[in-house]
Length: 69
Picture 1 (cartoon, rainbow, N blue to C red):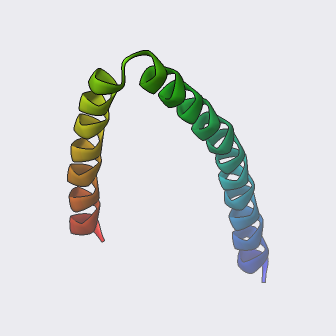
Picture 2: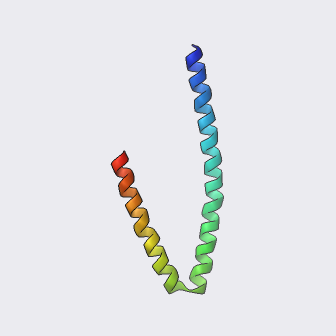
Picture 3: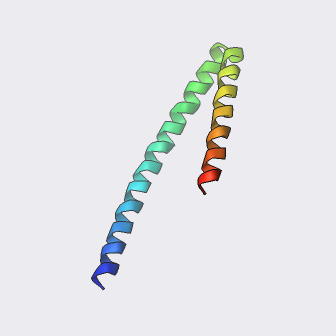
């Protein structure tokens, strides 16, 4: 019985931390989009090149994650 309570308490702690991360990421994603808007307004061609590189690296990361799961 004690072990179940302890596990529930630990799970609640993890879920609380995950919620905090989620809230921070929401704000950070908004900041990213603002930077992206500024960059495309300033120099759309260079911004597109950088975004393409980010996209390719994100795809590589996704493939590695697939290997893990």
